Amino acid sequence: MDLCDLSVIRTLLEEHGLRMQKSLGQNFLIDPEVPRRIADSVGEADEVLEIGPGIGCLTAELCRAHPRVTAVELDAGLIPVLAKTLAEFDNVRVIHGDILKTDLPSLFSPGSRVAVCANLPYYITTPILMELIASPVPFVSLTVMVQAEVAARFTAPPGGRDYGAVTVALGAYGTVKKLFSVSAGHFYPAPKVDSAVVQIVPRETPLLAEKERPVFRSVVRAAFEKRRKTLANALASLPHGRSKEELGAILSSLGFPADVRGERLSPEDYASLARALFPQ
Ligand code: SAM
Image (cartoon, rainbow, N blue to C red; front, side):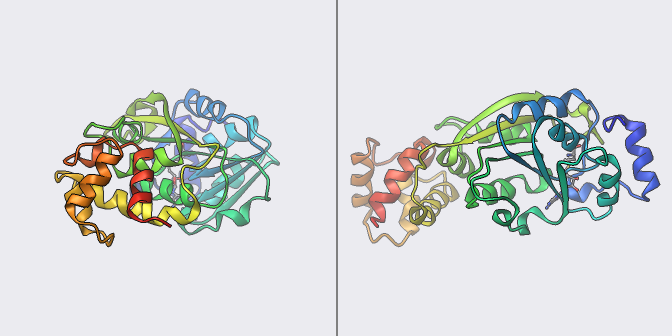
């Protein structure tokens, strides 16, 4: 069964009395080359976690390329469809649930190398990625399809308009690379914008200790909430007890002018700044 064939998709949905649900970000891939390429990009893993399998076109490719696949799908109507479309594979389990409410560590054995792979629902791309990078599961890689402009934000270098709190959070977690673009015509229904596949590979040595993360997050959030202000002014709202002059001196000690703006600091700079402001 070609799960990227539009008439197959329509027939499967019709047989199960389903319609595409825009509110769940349902844009299914209709070019078999794309799921194949995504599955091949994942790299070595014992298990792959897929978020939002839809009718299973990427899931099937993941099952062919990897030893074990766990797919979490929110739409209850798609569960019996997946039972049919993935019937030939004995290395997959499909879980009905919301990925944001799923206890991820309970899904995998300790020591197992788990990769994430997904054509993400666009309405919650960032919350899902924030949840994944905060998870105690030591993922080996995250390979995800996102909207092209979101990919540009994820991979932006410091200094530009696209660089923001999410870029810093992902950069603190690992290296973020755009793998390839996918135009809107490769989806049904076609979204208004193009997409891109990005891959995030966690740092071998984490930039932040567990206990440093909450402070790091609040410093980054404060810096970008008021990004038109200087960083020293934006940070004035945090309970660090420093005067603006003291903040300026800390920034100078990190090699920045006292009136630097938040978008110029790298994730490493933010880690140093958070440590200087809130020594633990
Ligand atoms: N993987 C399929 C493909 O590539 O054609 C479908 C991708 S579609 C962009 C996103 C999928 O995520 C849909 O099947 C949708 O029902 C599912 N989804 C949406 N919100 C979800 C959530 N919170 N948890 C798990 N799955 C979700």
